[in-house]
Length: 447
Image (tube, rainbow, N blue to C red; front, side, top):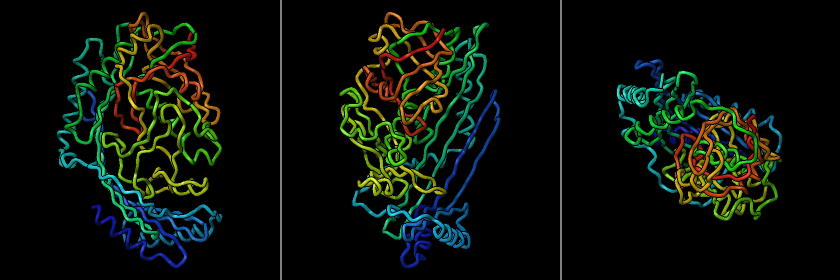
């Protein structure tokens, strides 16, 4: 499939006219989504898709067009449409198709053959097993709202008239469930998941235990008193915060005046034990990849090194506009032009487990879930406010559950107030991995 997609893209690029740059992205994908309920299939979707995206740049004018077909006539029409769109574009001196930058790509084995050969019956059985495991785990579990098995295999190729020629193939899968627990008075929900390159990597026991514990330990949750507290963020919550922080560390955010880290290169923005990297060459990351959205080799980029801000993420355009080099951080789908942003974020883990962090904190709150985080963050000022739920920490142990509380601070203050980082790195089905972190002096609003 990689060879076929390359051949198609090369044929289109070969039609580039004098004075124009052409970029062609061809894709083919297979995806399965299965949801079970009460031991039966509630929905089953097996989809196969293909498409092409073509960008044309001439005299600084960019045109983009795409289609959901690789038919030769459609390819020709899409190329002409991109050219036509370029003729109406606004000239931009920084607009250009990426060129090879000499960075060698890291070879990553991102597709386990067993994924393609995993029978649908076995996928269904895995989802049913997860649901059954949760229902049998605790008498307070009264139901499972949803149980899903999802997998995908994606192949893509990118060829440009500037000399880029690359193809990638990636695959992954996960199981996830949302549980429902009750003690006869209160009802709470919880979730659990497991991700991997192949079904053999999926841990039904872990997903079941997480879904059970997250629901049952919140039973009887109430609001807590308001005040400034030390909080521990669960890995899943940390990953959501990292995603927001990573987006503000992009060249695109800089150009739009929407980065709270603008003009802060070299500043101490976090404690000296904190290092934040974007490393799509980490094969264990769910979003690992050999190349970015413009076909440049993906690479490890350190954004915060021992607390010091040391870099931003750039694609070709933002790099040219800001007088620097691409960091191989173009993000896009075949039907969009490249943006710039993180591909696989993670904090360098610390040495303590979450239970050890709880003991060390002594008094505070463990936040296991947040709501409205993305809508509650101002990316320019860094102010955030989000609904939260979790468990109080008293005398070094988990205590009563709390819900309907609000946590508030600023992203800048939160980074500086990080007191410790756990060793419980979790791979999640998103662009950020998670780890427990301890943050001091967070405003918690309850009753």
